Image 1 (cartoon, rainbow, N blue to C red):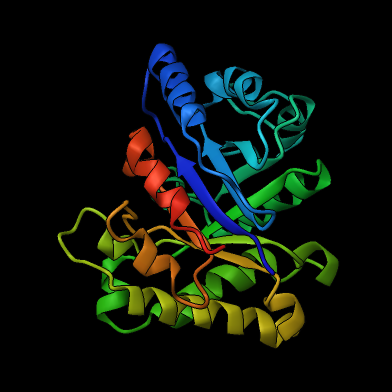
Image 2 (cartoon, rainbow, N blue to C red):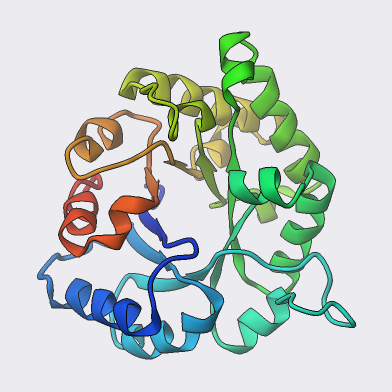
Amino acid sequence: MRKQIAAANWKMNLTFEQADQLINELLNFSFQLNDNQLVLLGVPFPYLMMAQHHLRLSNGIFVCAQNCASTSNGAYTGEVSAEMLKSMDISFVIIGHSERREYYHENNALLSEKVNKALESKVKPVFCCGEPLAVREGNNQNSFVEQQLKESLFHLSSDQIRNFIIAYEPIWAIGTGKTATSEQAQEMHAHIRNVFAEKYGMEIADSISILYGGSVKGANAADIFGKPDVDGGLVGGASLVATEFQKIINSLKA
């Protein structure tokens, strides 16, 4: 069975002390993860080693970086390479988040290079895709997301794409007052899985974990995660509240 994943994306939030406290609160909860369940904590770069220290003895909970460079090393002030992440034993990295695409103009070709660098360093990407409001209102969401996937990932081999992690973000449902239903999430997740099946075959497509990133909360997680093609969530604001994130973790499929 493919992995069911609760991935926290803290974005640019929390002081060092607040981050330390939040991790301690999470570790004090008594949730029990099954073999097919993972928890990822996407913390800011300055907190990676602190989080890694806290989680070194935990089972099924891993530190995740929020980004990596498209190059291995060199005169790139402020950048962090996948090789650096691996040297700290960081095993996961978020690539292509909608905010990186929008604010820093990261396109599909650049994200393809980031994916390559992560895989070269044996850091597993959590690759984000999703459509803005205008695309959804034009009913072009399927082709838009398909193009993102094809241009950034379809150069990969079957072995590289097996057990991959995708996070679908309906950007139009984040901070717009509009709400994505669990049925809309399932519809897009099924489409994404079919896109991979057409390229790599259904057996590999069924191994890919597809997370939902549209304002997941403790109150709606069970409904969303209960859909057959939804394998967990990439969680923003709710992951900054320990009790909320615990509810989300507990909503993962067994």
